Length: 355
Image (cartoon, rainbow, N blue to C red; front, side, top):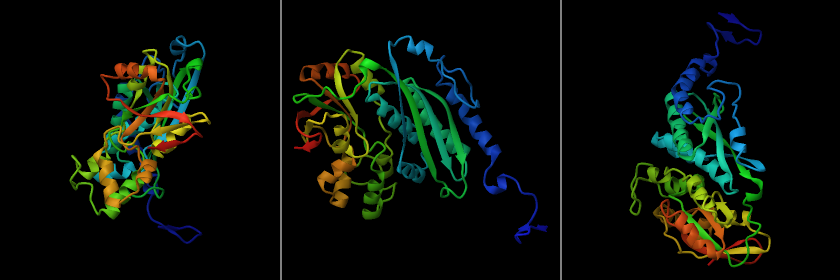
């Protein structure tokens, strides 16, 4: 037993594990996920697991484009991870991560190609990492994306015990003259709503306050109006709209604008794609209400406008098209989803008006 000049007593050997970082556990996590990662690889992926960087052969992709433009986005799952931790169900947040990121580049007409993830926690649990990544793998395979790499960080004293943080980075490509910007939206165009299946990955701090603090419920409680327990209703995976978007685009339909309805709901996200002199009127009640939103509003007696600012209210993504293209969109997506005419573009000042 020795004493440093600071006066602290040093007992026995000191190693990295004693400081809270276990390299062997990290290696175990990699071994658990490597086969899943490889299963997402296309022939374009030139590196294996463990490389310092990920190599992706662009030539076969770019040969199909005259003027390819790379599109990137980064996203997370917010405090939905708390619901996953309470339920000890972690695969669905892996699906959420890919879907949230992919949808943000789909709105520009980009086809997702590769995905990178970052998972940070206080103490690494290989089984939990495996479950999270298994969700990413499923979502990547469903949408033709290669999960080419990632980072798992064990960070003691940074996160609370059992806490995780997730970040995903997606890269895609779009033909320059086919980028969807919304700049050609004009009064008279129709807003088509494609349903969500719940909160997706936004509004969870508000939802937790309503259910757990105000309502006094637990994740395992059942409530009249919900088909599932509170926790399972909140954990419903974020829909990935890759197939929806490209079913329309590959059919040659002129989709003028697409908005992913994330944080801020319809009120904040649709204006992001509108010209300055155009507004949109949304007809409330023109699509089915999801029970989870009705229950939350009832628990907190929340103003309707606030619900529309915080949540997607049952619409996960919107297309804005010419009125003559409405039936073509419905036909192109008929095997994937219901589609609702929820409003239209009008003269205005770049805002959403609830009617």
